[in-house]
Amino acid sequence: MAVLVTGAAGFIGFHLCAALLARGTAVVGVDNLNAYYDVALKRARLAELEPHAGFSFHETDIADHEAMAAIFAAAGPIRRVVHLAAQAGVRHSIDNPMAYVHANLVGHAVILELCRQAPAFEHLVYASSSSVYGGNTKLPFAVADPVDRPVSLYAATKRADELMSHTYSHLYRLAVTGLRFFTVYGPWGRPDMAAYLFTEAILAGRAIKVFNHGRMKRDFTYIDDIVAGVIAALDPPPADTGAAAPARLYNIGNHKAEDLMRFIAVLEDAIGAKARMDMLPMQPGDVAETYADITDIQRDLGFAPTTGIDEGLPRFVDWYRGYHRL
Image (cartoon, rainbow, N blue to C red; front, side, top):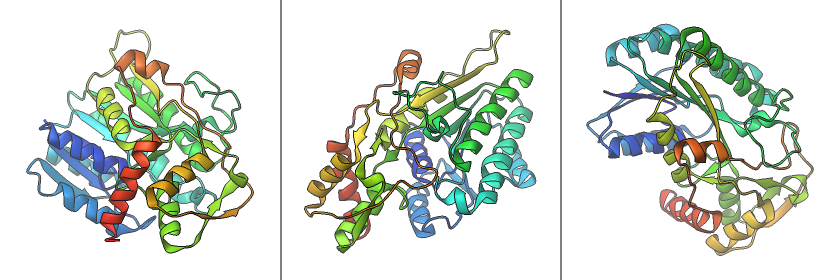
């Protein structure tokens, strides 16, 4: 029985597919390979997956209901889905709002509806984001905290996905688990994220952009820890007791808020060069600090992150040098 993974050519999706294939699980991957960032990187990830006999891939827009229905029908029976595909990026959503409506709202609704219609469907795990906490000042962020004041359209779409998922779970008894990811980094990472942007600039001798004059903290979470958490969430669907909806929502982070300046210092050591810094004010839609309370996912699923930035960032730099042949 195959697991369908949307966003299979993305950063987290690629690593998840590789982990599922390594344990003998067949994977049906879906991705539209959009040009939000370098498509060559997405194709390079797929090239790592394609030799596996258990992997099949469809270049398809998740918001295309007819095309996605055909994939579900051809691959069947699809009983488990990990839905990671989305238009990513807080800052990009300010200038390109309709891309987020299309992918994150319409696309998510399509996945929910197809899961509902799939015979003997068991479990949908989907990606949310720490961005839903908006400008909350209570730290660490807990799942029960208010999330009704997003500060970016990206965050608003992710919160809407959570609400739609809960509604489907309540109405149709669809087993769903939402995961609020906190800043993910590691090998094969996204070029629009700090580790990649900073490494690229430092190696090229360019200044890095440091927002809020460096007064930022992030719960940086290593990709292997994220994948372990996703698989832990996927394996046991939430039970349907007939009372509450069979829906769960978890933070998935490292449970540590790292100072941005320390993140830069660790990266400098891994690269062996000092960064030139362009200190800038806070960007619209951004927040000063993120910090995950992971009590719930620890208790329910045994999630226990093991990799800090002192170990994770050198691994990223080693991958970056190898990928770019530096």
